[in-house]
Amino acid sequence: MICDIIKPMKEINLKLGDIKYPLPERIIRKFKRCFKDVNLYPQNYDSLVSNLSKKFNVNKDNILLVNGIDGAIDLIVKVFGQKILFFTPTYFEFKEAARRNGRKYKATYSFNGQWKEYKINTNNPEVKKASLIFLCNPNNPFGLLNARTILDITKKTNGIVAVDECYIDFGGESGLRYIKNYPNLLVLRSFSKGYSAAGLRLGFIVGE
Image (cartoon, rainbow, N blue to C red; front, side, top):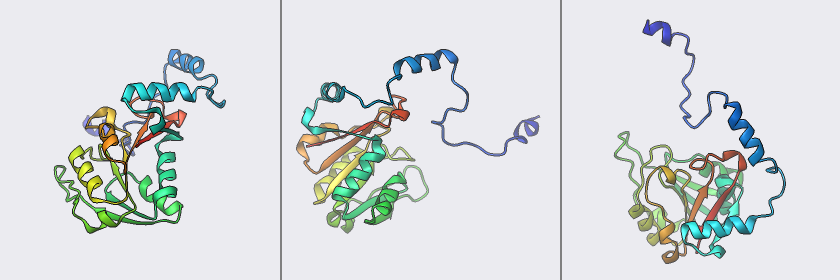
């Protein structure tokens, strides 16, 4: 009987965030009401920034709205990406943004095959030389990284440390509380995962 169940399967979709079944009609109707003007230029940027400022206890001037985290990554690469460093396995867009913009990058493999041993070597000589270091907190795909490692890297480099916190709502310690003490630290946030609003392509950067 198990074979009869398994046999028709041709592939397994590991992207658990994908919607595999149609949404109920009542939810679709509510979406249509809430987002009826979503294709228009918004007039409430200041309102959103003010709410974010209050929620995360950061100054409004330290928040920049962007076209999703991918837009943030691309912008940061263009501004600071003379020499980029990231630690793999990690989010593929770090590499793609570097290649797309013709920037030099170094990818350092940091996983030995055991889930508890994804370790970033903060003493790597490339850390000090990089103009831009990308990190994921928690790391994609393993969910492993801690604030101590992020701060250690931030202290040891002369470059910008950009931390993608797309999945921070699901676990881990955010770097937002450290922004005021580390002017080379940038935190990237999204509404796509924790707020289920990926289609809005909305994110923000926080930095001192």
